[in-house]
Image 1 (cartoon, rainbow, N blue to C red):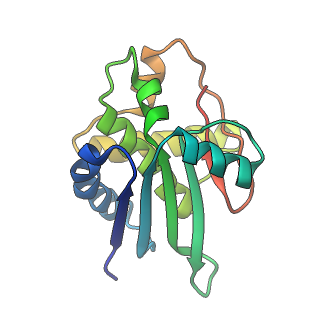
Image 2: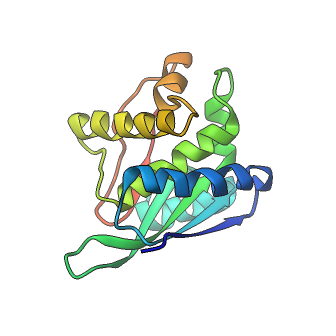
Length: 171
């Protein structure tokens, strides 16, 4: 089946071509059953509102994932990924990671959640982030997650997720 990607950019519009080019490529590398993904690039205010509404956590986060539709086996085939552009800017500040690649990492992270990956346990966290970097290397972008963590002074800890809705916090 054909993969359909829709991108809405309340901010970060300059990065849409990079995302539009690379997310379908990541989907092909992943070889997932996901047939439709909506990606929204938002600011701090919108992300904070969604984070509080759905996770009961104040303040912005980097990415939220919403599964929308599943197949007869319960596998997600459609979903929405919300990415916070200002959070990505803060995360790459002082690192060698380009903002567009950090945004791609967040979109890929959301896509992996939709495809059944999780990062609640330390073991799953490592698996998921290795997969992200593996895909990004295959796309020619190179490792983003581990490079941004290595360049920063923050620690690298599993996210605070709840079933059905995913969020990722590295620091």
